[in-house]
Length: 511
Image 1 (cartoon, helix red, strand yellow):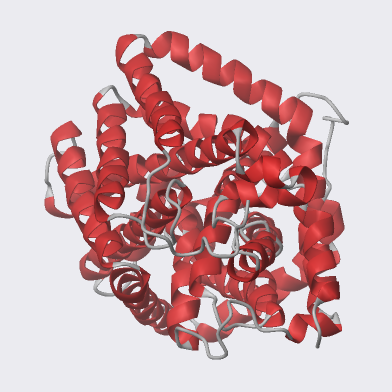
Image 2 (cartoon, rainbow, N blue to C red):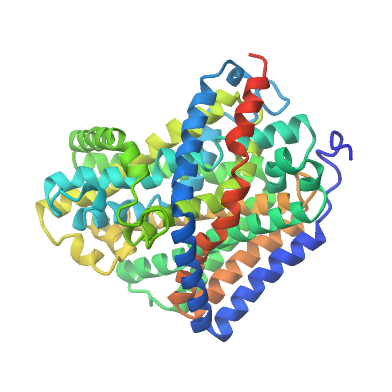
């Protein structure tokens, strides 16, 4: 088959792929409605199996992806510009905003407030000699958060796979879909046939689970915040309304496309985020924040391999315990996003050099994310140190939204700042919703400009799934988030060829 002239044909839907993916997600929701207890048992046992047998592999995969990406960026061929255009389609700020909004949408607000506090109150076992709840524990808590949201997390979102997809799609005419990542192994069989259909299906299911989870969790979080700030009832009705508003926003953005709605929403995200970060630094102490950032970064870098490869008592195949519910959980979440995020980044990175793409994903974006965690989470740690119980009491029971509100309400103009952070969370998740709606539609079309009705379907479907799972109780969302790790198992195998094929592509490029 000649793929060279198949880059932008008239959009056509892959019906078998659509049926498999939509059917699976529908069955998951029906099972949750009919017998959530049985579903929970299946998900929990699958989660334990995934963590036990793939945890070490995922740790090695993320570390290798990051290190290989850095080596690739130093190769002469990394100066090559990708996408068959000489000038970038978006400005640096627009491009960076769209990329930054992806991972930050999942954790930029509530996890940034809650995870450092969790590690402060219970020091990670890799730093077992550090006493919890002390000033010394603050930088170690931040350093552990850096591992989960920093260099390794960002690298797996596309530092290698983006290069592969841009090479095969824009230069060879292969589909802009997950199946193309297996082309080096299976050649045309990966593109035309059951291998390609199954590959796309598992990646779509993984990213739907990874997106519906945060959408549903956002409904719970914002409902809690509205109740705390304005005494609005915190119930399923409020949560469903929040999800409905969010769905309307990201569907409208996805319909207008990458060049309009998606980049506009991402740009607004980053402007609001910068304003709020500046306010936090002014309200607390910029010098203390900067000092904490550099101190934690030094600890993170000096203990980088020890943290990345930490196994504790898990061994090669064992009960990972803390590791499974922290590091391996995050790795499964980000791996599940990997192929689809690479599609999105490939679409918005035309006209960028290989070096620029890798440098943005593996260095700049992680450092910005770490700094964000330092300002939001570090402010909470500072408040807790000066007045024990200020944040930890609200955070009891791992209450992420309560931790954020406790931090923001302790600041000047607390009610306004709290509301602005809730708004930022919604726009962040909306950005993930619109970008994932777009790439879901692309992956089941034969064009990078998919039909509008397909975008509308997947956008509404994800919002509806989140609402259904909320209606049966927060346990439905919890089980979907655990299923994210299960769905990452096959996706992690799809990512494996990028370890050798991406360097080969760079090596073949002329400087």
